[in-house]
Amino acid sequence: MFWRINSKDFTLRDAELLLLTYLDPILPASLTAFHAWMLTTPTLKSFIEKTMTSTGERADQIAARLTGALHNHWRKRLQDGDGDAYRARLSIIGPMHARIGVPMTFFIDGYRLLLIECQNRLEPALAKLPQERPMLMATLSGLVLDDLNNIVATYSTVLKKCVMGHTDTEPKPGGAG
Image 1: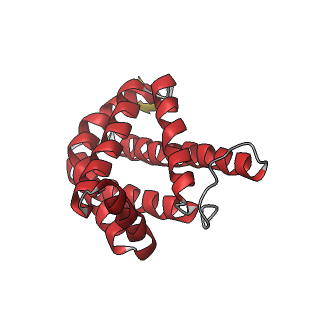
Image 2: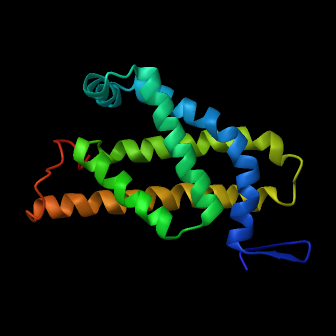
């Protein structure tokens, strides 16, 4: 049991699936705020500009693509749980960010921003669910922090391999942030 409300037991899976129904509609706006932050943070903006140069995309196209990818990542995590598909996505996301040199501190700042944005946007819907609200907010915090922890772990694995000389793809300076 993860939570009990009025004699009803909720597992973590129950809470995640219920959270999905409320998070999915507000997640695009929260992610838009996240990507606006990226475009106004000089270090992160430089990563976007490098991508623009290599792909020919405009900054807003890159932000839209990243927004869609992260929305999909979290939606699938809540739908399918912490399984093989989720772990496979992590094995791509963490190393990719390590290889381009995104400092780890920006992961923490970005996830903090996303957590606050999601909490603020969930409040109106959850006001109608006073009994479930604490459980759903705890589930959201767990989702964000667990995802951050898992991505940082895969990121760190790349850095360790580079330090030990087990990879040809060295992360860029500042990647250890």
